[in-house]
Length: 342
Image: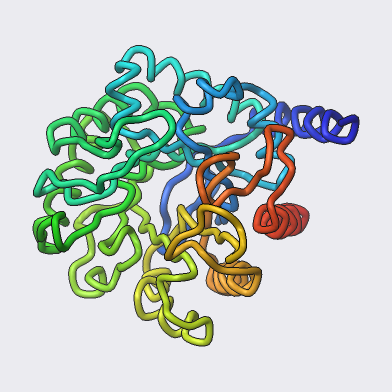
């Protein structure tokens, strides 16, 4: 316990100094850069929904200090439509205000993520449930999504702590979710980006591809028609059938994009086969962790790891003392090593 308290205190001291130096993030070529043009590689953690964390009683300074102590320089905040509806816009904005302030105090950048899964164009979304939210966890509309991002742009566009807006978490098609062409999806995203920029907001929009945010192949022929954006992939271990095929498949499916545009993997992570609540595609082992972090390091690709929570899998922590799971221990060590080399 003394070790944890010291670690959090040390992170808070370091973070309070670093927060004054947070610089506006933009895009130059295939890099995220600071205001003085220096390339920045993001290594960070995904929180669970701020509404959930507040209900769990841990939406506080200790949570963000722990993230910083793991070597992170960014935290991704996933806003589920159901939580946005249940808490209401004024209440949820207060959560975000507090979270962004706590991140800034630790010297952490923030990604705000509209955390829906499904086909926005067809209005069909993944069915699911959680311990806190109804089955319609991801339900939204194009109009609501546009309004959400206009609200984010107006409220946080002048705050350099908020580095990125992840426009839609995981586009998914097929079966009950219906179909959507890349042209149609591209048009939707370009409209959202234009609406964000109409308010003078320069926060970097992040764009995910199809297949639950994994597949960016269409970008080769039809990139998003907007400047200053980044691309997203979620390459969990089971997205490729065999570990021996990881590097070849990752390069073909999304990694090639990093040659021309900045790429951030806003969800990576794994759950060991013998751990409870595992499912495809998150089941894996340390071989995956080593492969994905090495792949990113060699290509200048940023990442954030899912999920800094004791309930949502793949879990990085076992308890609210922030005891790492096996995967959490691996990524903590990897991020701390990266931070020490800066």
